[in-house]
Every structure is written in structure tokens, then in C-alpha cells.
Amino acid sequence: MTLLGPAEIRDLAELLGIQPTKKLGQNFVIDANTVRRIVRVAGVTADTSVVEVGPGLGSLTLGLLETGAEVVAVEIDKRLAAQLPLTVDELQPGSRLTVITQDAMVIKELPGTPTVLVANLPYNVSVPVLLHFLETFPALESAMVMVQSEVGQRIAAAPGSKVYGTPSAKAAWYGEWKTAGQVSRQVFWPVPNVDSILVGFERRELPGTEDERLATFALVDAAFQQRRKMLRQSLSVVLGDSATASARIEAAGLKPTARGEELTVRDFLAIARTAG
Ligand code: SAM
Image (cartoon, rainbow, N blue to C red; front, top):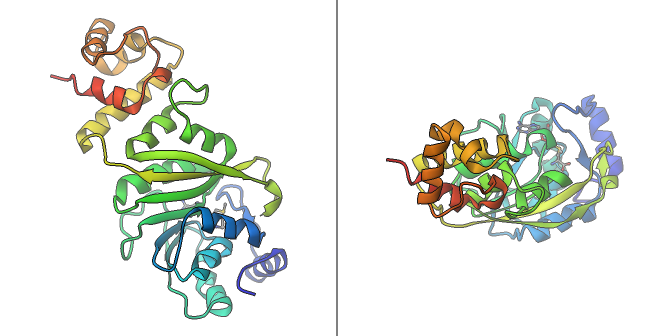
């Protein structure tokens, strides 16, 4: 036995006196096939240096370690973080695991240089955690994460799609996103009341500088805060007034009457670049 099944998860939770909390998005994977599937589609091998957010009781962590990969795991819940090395020592002694007890939303440094992010993310904070990691750890070349289905669709959406919005445009700043398959809610304990999906990420060269990113993200936020309005109106909040907004949108080669959902992140960047 090298991975956790339903009985081991139940025993561990009982041992630690843990009642999974909604606040921390604690839904633990109890199915070894799902774990191995995630590890496989993430492309993790013995040579990979992985960072995992929210290892919980260690279901996915053990699947990653099983390949021989090196894993840094960031867990906010102190009891879970303290237990994880013990579980791993028992089931897969000699594994290369470092556990960090910290909030993944604000972590600024990681030991080593992980190049792949793999996680079953806490659902309520999945987008901010992803954006924080991509921004803070440029060495991350790829990611494979499990998120709430609607959130995953949104992250991977292209302009023109009904679900295209702020997370799609911001996530696209860093690279390409694709959904990589649904995951049944039955593989979790407790069973969540939402569906899950895998989304994969491949980093691409950043389209602009950090200042340009901030200016672009401000435009994205403004455009989707009033997503039904035309850009000349929604962007006037950050660009001054609608005449200035129109002039800058046109200078970027776009239509002031378009709506945010039609623009790629590079289009927003083009508008940001018309400044001064
Ligand atoms: N990886 C485990 C699995 O697949 O069974 C657990 C996944 S569970 C959906 C999310 C995990 O993220 C929990 O262990 C929770 O305590 C942790 N977590 C929640 N918020 C966090 C944060 N801000 N930083 C780090 N970990 C967090």
C-alpha cells in the first residue's frame, strides 16, 4: 500500500480528530485511480520538481512521490502539515518531500525551484492562488490543477465564450490553459456539492512588463465589472472619460463599441500601451 484509500483517509482523519472544513475547502481524494490519473496528465516523472498546494492528508502527494519526483507541499492547516511527513515516512519512506506550513495566497519563497504545480486546490481560493503562484514563481513551467468545474471552464475560456471573464484574461497573461477532463464528485470525502475538472497550464513568454501587467489587469477588471457595457463606457472608469477611452481603444486598433468579452489579454495590453 503506497497510496491512501477511503479506509486510510477515515483512519487518519479520526487519528487527528479532523472534521474537514468548508472554509478551507477540505475535500480529500479517496481514490487511487484519480490520483494516478492526475499525476499522469501532469507529466510528473522522477526528474520533476513539483510544488503542491494544499496536500491535506496526502492523497495526491503520495501519488506524486510514487514517481520519484521531489515535492514541496504548502499546507495552511497545521495539523495536516504536521501529520504529512509521518504518513509519507510510513507509506513511502525515503521520499523527497518538504512540507511548508503557510498560506499559499501569500507565500513568497519556496525551497528549491519547482517547475510544475500540481494540486487539488481549495475551491474558494483557487483563482487567487493560481494567479499568485504564476506571478510569484516564474520558474513554474506548467501546472495541472483540479478546481470546481465552472471555475476551470472559466479559466480556460477564450474570448467570445459566455464564461470568458476576468480569470480567463488574467490567467492567459502567463500562458495557455486547457481543460483536461471532469472528475466525479464521488472520489472525494466529504462528497462536495459541486463538480470538479482538471485544468492544465503551459507557460509562454510574458507579453509585457510588470507595469504593463498591472495596467492591463486594471483594464480587465474594469471591463468585466460592467461586462454588458461597451468598452468606451466600462473602461472610462480607469481611462478618465468616454472620449479618452474611445480614443485609446481606437489607437489600439480596437472598436470602442466592443465589449470586454471580445478582447484577448493582448488586446487589453494594446490599450494599456497607448498611455502617454
Ligand atoms: N490534496 C488533498 C487531496 O487531494 O486530498 C487535499 C485537497 S483539499 C481540496 C484542499 C487543501 O488545501 C486542504 O488540505 C486545505 O487545508 C488546504 N488549504 C486551504 N486553503 C489553503 C491556503 N490558503 N494555503 C494552503 N493550503 C490551503
